[in-house]
Figure: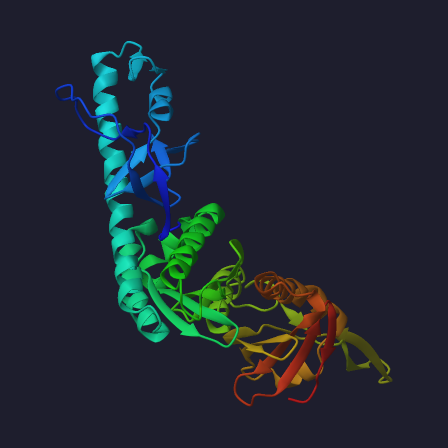
Length: 398
Protein backbone atom coordinates (compact mmCIF):
# COMPACT_ATOMS: atom_id res chain seq x y z
CA UNK A 1 0.00 0.00 0.00
CA UNK A 2 1.08 3.62 -0.61
CA UNK A 3 1.55 4.86 2.92
CA UNK A 4 2.87 8.38 2.35
CA UNK A 5 1.62 9.55 -1.09
CA UNK A 6 0.04 12.98 -0.47
CA UNK A 7 -1.57 15.36 -2.94
CA UNK A 8 -3.32 18.75 -2.61
CA UNK A 9 -6.77 18.76 -4.20
CA UNK A 10 -9.82 21.04 -4.43
CA UNK A 11 -12.76 18.99 -3.15
CA UNK A 12 -16.17 19.26 -4.78
CA UNK A 13 -18.29 16.28 -3.68
CA UNK A 14 -17.36 12.92 -2.23
CA UNK A 15 -19.18 10.42 -0.04
CA UNK A 16 -18.21 10.15 3.61
CA UNK A 17 -18.56 6.72 5.24
CA UNK A 18 -21.07 7.00 8.07
CA UNK A 19 -23.15 4.58 10.02
CA UNK A 20 -26.37 6.62 10.26
CA UNK A 21 -28.25 9.69 9.00
CA UNK A 22 -28.47 12.92 11.07
CA UNK A 23 -30.15 16.28 10.53
CA UNK A 24 -29.83 18.04 7.17
CA UNK A 25 -26.89 20.46 7.33
CA UNK A 26 -26.28 23.55 5.20
CA UNK A 27 -22.86 24.78 4.14
CA UNK A 28 -21.52 28.03 2.76
CA UNK A 29 -20.54 27.84 -0.90
CA UNK A 30 -16.77 27.96 -1.02
CA UNK A 31 -13.72 26.18 -2.43
CA UNK A 32 -11.04 25.03 0.01
CA UNK A 33 -7.63 23.52 -0.71
CA UNK A 34 -7.12 20.37 1.35
CA UNK A 35 -4.29 17.84 1.63
CA UNK A 36 -5.40 14.34 0.61
CA UNK A 37 -3.42 11.13 1.21
CA UNK A 38 -3.76 8.36 -1.38
CA UNK A 39 -2.85 4.98 0.11
CA UNK A 40 -4.11 2.47 -2.44
CA UNK A 41 -7.20 2.09 -0.25
CA UNK A 42 -9.39 -0.80 -1.34
CA UNK A 43 -13.04 -1.54 -0.59
CA UNK A 44 -14.47 -5.02 -0.03
CA UNK A 45 -18.08 -6.18 0.01
CA UNK A 46 -18.67 -9.55 1.65
CA UNK A 47 -14.93 -10.32 1.45
CA UNK A 48 -14.75 -9.44 -2.26
CA UNK A 49 -12.72 -6.49 -3.50
CA UNK A 50 -14.79 -3.93 -5.40
CA UNK A 51 -13.66 -1.79 -8.32
CA UNK A 52 -13.92 1.96 -7.64
CA UNK A 53 -14.17 4.52 -10.44
CA UNK A 54 -12.74 7.18 -8.12
CA UNK A 55 -9.74 6.30 -5.95
CA UNK A 56 -10.51 6.66 -2.20
CA UNK A 57 -8.34 9.01 -0.15
CA UNK A 58 -7.88 10.38 3.38
CA UNK A 59 -8.24 13.98 4.52
CA UNK A 60 -7.64 14.91 8.18
CA UNK A 61 -8.05 11.30 9.31
CA UNK A 62 -11.34 10.78 7.42
CA UNK A 63 -11.50 8.38 4.48
CA UNK A 64 -13.55 9.50 1.47
CA UNK A 65 -15.07 7.10 -1.05
CA UNK A 66 -17.01 8.18 -4.15
CA UNK A 67 -20.71 8.27 -3.30
CA UNK A 68 -21.74 6.95 -6.70
CA UNK A 69 -19.31 4.02 -6.24
CA UNK A 70 -20.79 3.17 -2.84
CA UNK A 71 -24.38 3.59 -4.03
CA UNK A 72 -23.82 1.23 -6.96
CA UNK A 73 -22.78 -1.51 -4.54
CA UNK A 74 -26.33 -1.48 -3.14
CA UNK A 75 -28.22 -0.94 -6.43
CA UNK A 76 -28.98 2.69 -5.60
CA UNK A 77 -28.92 5.33 -8.33
CA UNK A 78 -27.00 8.52 -7.54
CA UNK A 79 -27.52 11.84 -9.42
CA UNK A 80 -26.10 15.34 -9.09
CA UNK A 81 -28.48 18.29 -9.46
CA UNK A 82 -26.17 21.22 -10.19
CA UNK A 83 -28.99 23.80 -10.10
CA UNK A 84 -29.82 22.99 -6.48
CA UNK A 85 -26.41 21.63 -5.53
CA UNK A 86 -28.10 18.43 -4.36
CA UNK A 87 -27.14 14.75 -4.43
CA UNK A 88 -30.19 12.67 -5.33
CA UNK A 89 -30.34 9.00 -4.34
CA UNK A 90 -33.08 6.76 -5.72
CA UNK A 91 -33.86 3.20 -4.79
CA UNK A 92 -35.72 1.28 -2.13
CA UNK A 93 -33.87 -0.61 0.58
CA UNK A 94 -35.56 -3.28 2.69
CA UNK A 95 -35.01 -3.44 6.41
CA UNK A 96 -32.93 -6.58 5.90
CA UNK A 97 -30.83 -4.80 3.29
CA UNK A 98 -30.51 -1.83 5.62
CA UNK A 99 -29.09 -4.04 8.36
CA UNK A 100 -26.71 -5.64 5.89
CA UNK A 101 -25.67 -2.21 4.66
CA UNK A 102 -24.90 -1.01 8.18
CA UNK A 103 -22.88 -4.16 8.86
CA UNK A 104 -20.88 -3.61 5.72
CA UNK A 105 -20.28 0.03 6.59
CA UNK A 106 -19.05 -1.03 10.03
CA UNK A 107 -16.64 -3.52 8.45
CA UNK A 108 -15.37 -0.87 6.04
CA UNK A 109 -14.77 1.55 8.89
CA UNK A 110 -12.78 -1.11 10.71
CA UNK A 111 -10.58 -1.55 7.65
CA UNK A 112 -10.12 2.21 7.44
CA UNK A 113 -9.10 2.38 11.11
CA UNK A 114 -6.54 -0.40 10.58
CA UNK A 115 -5.10 1.36 7.53
CA UNK A 116 -4.97 4.68 9.37
CA UNK A 117 -3.14 3.03 12.29
CA UNK A 118 -0.52 1.68 9.89
CA UNK A 119 -0.16 5.12 8.30
CA UNK A 120 0.37 6.67 11.71
CA UNK A 121 3.05 4.10 12.53
CA UNK A 122 5.07 4.69 9.40
CA UNK A 123 4.63 8.46 9.44
CA UNK A 124 6.05 8.41 12.96
CA UNK A 125 9.06 6.43 11.78
CA UNK A 126 9.66 8.75 8.82
CA UNK A 127 9.33 11.89 10.90
CA UNK A 128 11.68 10.62 13.61
CA UNK A 129 14.28 8.72 11.60
CA UNK A 130 14.34 10.34 8.16
CA UNK A 131 18.02 9.66 7.55
CA UNK A 132 18.84 6.88 10.03
CA UNK A 133 18.26 3.63 8.11
CA UNK A 134 19.46 1.39 10.95
CA UNK A 135 16.90 2.88 13.34
CA UNK A 136 14.11 2.46 10.79
CA UNK A 137 15.02 -1.19 10.21
CA UNK A 138 15.08 -1.82 13.97
CA UNK A 139 11.65 -0.24 14.35
CA UNK A 140 10.27 -2.24 11.43
CA UNK A 141 11.45 -5.47 13.07
CA UNK A 142 9.30 -4.50 16.08
CA UNK A 143 6.31 -3.16 14.13
CA UNK A 144 5.91 -5.80 11.42
CA UNK A 145 5.18 -8.76 13.78
CA UNK A 146 2.32 -6.76 15.33
CA UNK A 147 1.05 -5.60 11.94
CA UNK A 148 0.91 -9.13 10.53
CA UNK A 149 0.13 -11.15 13.64
CA UNK A 150 -3.32 -12.12 12.34
CA UNK A 151 -2.24 -12.98 8.80
CA UNK A 152 -3.17 -16.63 8.19
CA UNK A 153 -3.01 -17.47 11.92
CA UNK A 154 0.81 -17.61 11.95
CA UNK A 155 3.16 -15.69 14.24
CA UNK A 156 5.73 -14.05 11.94
CA UNK A 157 9.14 -12.65 12.88
CA UNK A 158 11.18 -10.31 10.70
CA UNK A 159 14.91 -9.62 10.30
CA UNK A 160 16.01 -6.79 7.98
CA UNK A 161 19.62 -6.26 6.87
CA UNK A 162 20.99 -3.57 4.59
CA UNK A 163 23.20 -4.92 1.79
CA UNK A 164 25.24 -2.96 -0.75
CA UNK A 165 22.66 -3.18 -3.55
CA UNK A 166 19.52 -4.50 -1.87
CA UNK A 167 17.65 -5.05 1.40
CA UNK A 168 17.68 -8.57 2.80
CA UNK A 169 14.45 -9.63 4.54
CA UNK A 170 14.07 -12.88 6.48
CA UNK A 171 10.56 -13.83 7.58
CA UNK A 172 10.54 -16.63 10.15
CA UNK A 173 7.90 -18.79 11.79
CA UNK A 174 7.97 -21.83 14.06
CA UNK A 175 7.07 -24.87 11.97
CA UNK A 176 6.36 -27.11 14.95
CA UNK A 177 3.52 -24.75 15.92
CA UNK A 178 2.33 -23.49 12.53
CA UNK A 179 3.20 -26.19 9.98
CA UNK A 180 -0.46 -26.93 9.20
CA UNK A 181 -1.27 -23.22 8.77
CA UNK A 182 1.65 -22.79 6.36
CA UNK A 183 0.54 -25.82 4.34
CA UNK A 184 -2.95 -24.30 4.11
CA UNK A 185 -1.65 -21.05 2.56
CA UNK A 186 -2.31 -20.88 -1.17
CA UNK A 187 0.14 -19.47 -3.70
CA UNK A 188 -2.01 -16.36 -4.13
CA UNK A 189 -2.11 -15.83 -0.35
CA UNK A 190 1.67 -16.05 -0.13
CA UNK A 191 1.94 -13.55 -3.00
CA UNK A 192 -0.43 -11.08 -1.30
CA UNK A 193 1.37 -11.45 2.02
CA UNK A 194 4.83 -10.85 0.58
CA UNK A 195 3.67 -7.96 -1.61
CA UNK A 196 2.10 -6.24 1.39
CA UNK A 197 5.20 -6.75 3.56
CA UNK A 198 7.60 -5.43 0.88
CA UNK A 199 5.38 -2.42 0.14
CA UNK A 200 5.15 -1.50 3.83
CA UNK A 201 8.92 -1.78 4.25
CA UNK A 202 9.71 0.44 1.26
CA UNK A 203 7.09 3.00 2.31
CA UNK A 204 8.82 3.32 5.67
CA UNK A 205 12.19 3.75 3.92
CA UNK A 206 11.19 6.72 1.75
CA UNK A 207 13.72 9.58 1.79
CA UNK A 208 16.51 7.25 2.95
CA UNK A 209 19.42 5.58 1.18
CA UNK A 210 17.24 2.48 0.75
CA UNK A 211 14.36 4.35 -0.91
CA UNK A 212 13.17 2.18 -3.82
CA UNK A 213 15.88 -0.47 -3.35
CA UNK A 214 15.35 -4.07 -4.38
CA UNK A 215 14.28 -6.52 -1.64
CA UNK A 216 15.52 -10.11 -1.53
CA UNK A 217 14.31 -12.50 1.12
CA UNK A 218 13.21 -15.87 2.40
CA UNK A 219 10.45 -17.37 4.48
CA UNK A 220 12.16 -19.69 6.95
CA UNK A 221 10.93 -22.45 9.27
CA UNK A 222 13.09 -21.95 12.38
CA UNK A 223 12.10 -25.18 14.10
CA UNK A 224 13.01 -27.42 11.17
CA UNK A 225 15.80 -25.27 9.67
CA UNK A 226 14.09 -25.23 6.26
CA UNK A 227 13.73 -22.46 3.71
CA UNK A 228 10.08 -22.54 2.66
CA UNK A 229 10.13 -19.77 0.07
CA UNK A 230 12.53 -17.34 -1.64
CA UNK A 231 11.35 -14.01 -3.05
CA UNK A 232 12.45 -10.79 -4.71
CA UNK A 233 10.59 -7.48 -4.91
CA UNK A 234 11.83 -4.93 -7.42
CA UNK A 235 10.10 -1.84 -8.85
CA UNK A 236 6.68 -3.00 -7.65
CA UNK A 237 7.01 -6.54 -9.05
CA UNK A 238 7.18 -9.62 -6.82
CA UNK A 239 8.74 -12.91 -7.91
CA UNK A 240 8.90 -15.85 -5.55
CA UNK A 241 9.43 -19.60 -5.50
CA UNK A 242 8.18 -22.06 -2.95
CA UNK A 243 10.86 -24.51 -1.86
CA UNK A 244 9.93 -28.18 -2.01
CA UNK A 245 10.84 -29.62 1.37
CA UNK A 246 12.36 -33.07 1.72
CA UNK A 247 12.50 -35.53 4.57
CA UNK A 248 15.69 -35.85 6.60
CA UNK A 249 17.54 -39.10 5.72
CA UNK A 250 17.24 -40.42 9.27
CA UNK A 251 13.49 -39.79 9.30
CA UNK A 252 13.11 -41.38 5.87
CA UNK A 253 15.11 -44.41 7.03
CA UNK A 254 12.72 -44.83 9.96
CA UNK A 255 9.73 -44.61 7.60
CA UNK A 256 11.19 -47.20 5.21
CA UNK A 257 11.95 -49.55 8.10
CA UNK A 258 8.42 -49.26 9.48
CA UNK A 259 6.53 -49.34 6.18
CA UNK A 260 8.64 -51.59 3.95
CA UNK A 261 11.25 -53.70 5.75
CA UNK A 262 9.25 -54.47 8.89
CA UNK A 263 5.78 -53.73 7.55
CA UNK A 264 5.74 -55.37 4.10
CA UNK A 265 8.46 -57.99 4.49
CA UNK A 266 8.49 -58.72 8.22
CA UNK A 267 12.27 -58.14 8.04
CA UNK A 268 12.82 -61.18 5.79
CA UNK A 269 14.97 -59.94 2.94
CA UNK A 270 14.10 -62.99 0.81
CA UNK A 271 10.50 -61.78 0.76
CA UNK A 272 8.61 -63.51 3.58
CA UNK A 273 8.86 -66.06 6.37
CA UNK A 274 8.04 -68.83 3.89
CA UNK A 275 10.58 -67.77 1.27
CA UNK A 276 14.16 -69.01 1.39
CA UNK A 277 17.52 -68.48 -0.20
CA UNK A 278 19.33 -71.59 -1.33
CA UNK A 279 22.88 -72.58 -2.01
CA UNK A 280 24.35 -73.87 -5.23
CA UNK A 281 23.69 -77.60 -5.67
CA UNK A 282 26.35 -79.88 -4.27
CA UNK A 283 27.06 -83.52 -5.01
CA UNK A 284 26.42 -86.31 -2.48
CA UNK A 285 28.20 -89.56 -3.20
CA UNK A 286 26.72 -92.83 -1.86
CA UNK A 287 28.63 -96.13 -1.87
CA UNK A 288 26.47 -99.14 -2.84
CA UNK A 289 27.57 -102.81 -2.54
CA UNK A 290 25.66 -105.42 -4.54
CA UNK A 291 25.05 -109.06 -3.58
CA UNK A 292 28.28 -110.15 -5.23
CA UNK A 293 30.20 -107.71 -3.12
CA UNK A 294 30.94 -105.35 -5.96
CA UNK A 295 31.09 -101.66 -4.99
CA UNK A 296 29.39 -98.95 -7.08
CA UNK A 297 28.70 -95.26 -6.42
CA UNK A 298 25.50 -93.28 -6.75
CA UNK A 299 25.34 -89.49 -6.91
CA UNK A 300 22.62 -87.05 -5.85
CA UNK A 301 22.53 -83.28 -6.01
CA UNK A 302 21.09 -81.22 -3.17
CA UNK A 303 21.15 -77.66 -1.83
CA UNK A 304 20.71 -75.97 1.52
CA UNK A 305 17.92 -73.51 2.25
CA UNK A 306 18.32 -70.59 4.62
CA UNK A 307 16.77 -67.25 5.58
CA UNK A 308 18.20 -63.90 6.64
CA UNK A 309 16.42 -61.22 8.67
CA UNK A 310 17.20 -57.50 8.80
CA UNK A 311 18.35 -55.99 12.09
CA UNK A 312 19.05 -52.38 11.09
CA UNK A 313 18.66 -49.93 8.20
CA UNK A 314 20.14 -46.52 7.40
CA UNK A 315 20.68 -44.11 4.51
CA UNK A 316 23.83 -42.11 3.65
CA UNK A 317 23.67 -38.98 1.49
CA UNK A 318 26.58 -38.50 -0.91
CA UNK A 319 27.57 -35.56 -3.09
CA UNK A 320 25.55 -36.80 -6.06
CA UNK A 321 23.88 -40.03 -4.92
CA UNK A 322 22.30 -41.81 -1.98
CA UNK A 323 23.24 -45.20 -0.51
CA UNK A 324 21.14 -47.40 1.73
CA UNK A 325 22.31 -50.24 3.96
CA UNK A 326 20.41 -53.25 5.28
CA UNK A 327 22.21 -55.01 8.10
CA UNK A 328 21.26 -58.69 8.56
CA UNK A 329 21.79 -61.41 11.13
CA UNK A 330 23.83 -64.10 9.36
CA UNK A 331 23.45 -66.44 12.36
CA UNK A 332 25.71 -69.32 11.24
CA UNK A 333 24.84 -69.04 7.55
CA UNK A 334 28.24 -67.71 6.47
CA UNK A 335 29.05 -70.79 4.36
CA UNK A 336 25.56 -70.84 2.89
CA UNK A 337 25.88 -67.21 1.79
CA UNK A 338 29.35 -67.80 0.36
CA UNK A 339 27.82 -70.55 -1.81
CA UNK A 340 24.50 -68.89 -2.53
CA UNK A 341 22.69 -69.56 -5.80
CA UNK A 342 22.90 -66.01 -7.10
CA UNK A 343 20.34 -66.38 -9.89
CA UNK A 344 17.79 -67.87 -7.52
CA UNK A 345 18.53 -65.23 -4.86
CA UNK A 346 18.04 -62.31 -7.25
CA UNK A 347 14.44 -63.34 -7.84
CA UNK A 348 13.83 -63.36 -4.09
CA UNK A 349 15.64 -60.19 -3.06
CA UNK A 350 14.76 -57.93 -5.98
CA UNK A 351 11.39 -56.85 -4.58
CA UNK A 352 12.56 -55.46 -1.26
CA UNK A 353 15.61 -53.74 -2.75
CA UNK A 354 13.56 -52.18 -5.54
CA UNK A 355 10.87 -50.95 -3.12
CA UNK A 356 13.48 -49.23 -0.96
CA UNK A 357 15.22 -47.69 -3.99
CA UNK A 358 11.92 -46.30 -5.31
CA UNK A 359 11.06 -44.75 -1.94
CA UNK A 360 14.38 -42.89 -1.77
CA UNK A 361 14.37 -41.83 -5.44
CA UNK A 362 10.81 -40.51 -5.17
CA UNK A 363 11.50 -38.55 -1.98
CA UNK A 364 14.59 -36.79 -3.32
CA UNK A 365 13.57 -36.64 -7.00
CA UNK A 366 16.47 -38.86 -8.13
CA UNK A 367 17.05 -41.17 -11.04
CA UNK A 368 17.12 -44.85 -10.09
CA UNK A 369 20.82 -45.14 -10.89
CA UNK A 370 21.54 -42.40 -8.31
CA UNK A 371 20.57 -44.79 -5.49
CA UNK A 372 22.76 -47.75 -4.49
CA UNK A 373 21.79 -50.45 -1.98
CA UNK A 374 23.93 -52.72 0.17
CA UNK A 375 23.38 -55.73 2.43
CA UNK A 376 25.89 -56.06 5.24
CA UNK A 377 26.59 -58.50 8.05
CA UNK A 378 25.51 -56.84 11.28
CA UNK A 379 28.24 -58.61 13.27
CA UNK A 380 31.32 -57.89 11.15
CA UNK A 381 30.12 -55.05 8.89
CA UNK A 382 31.19 -57.09 5.84
CA UNK A 383 29.46 -56.16 2.59
CA UNK A 384 27.49 -59.15 1.29
CA UNK A 385 25.67 -57.63 -1.71
CA UNK A 386 25.56 -54.47 -3.83
CA UNK A 387 22.41 -53.47 -5.72
CA UNK A 388 22.09 -50.69 -8.29
CA UNK A 389 19.14 -50.20 -10.64
CA UNK A 390 18.34 -53.93 -10.92
CA UNK A 391 21.97 -55.13 -11.09
CA UNK A 392 23.32 -57.39 -8.33
CA UNK A 393 26.84 -58.10 -7.18
CA UNK A 394 27.32 -60.80 -4.55
CA UNK A 395 30.36 -60.97 -2.28
CA UNK A 396 31.38 -64.42 -0.99
CA UNK A 397 33.72 -63.35 1.77
CA UNK A 398 31.99 -64.18 5.02
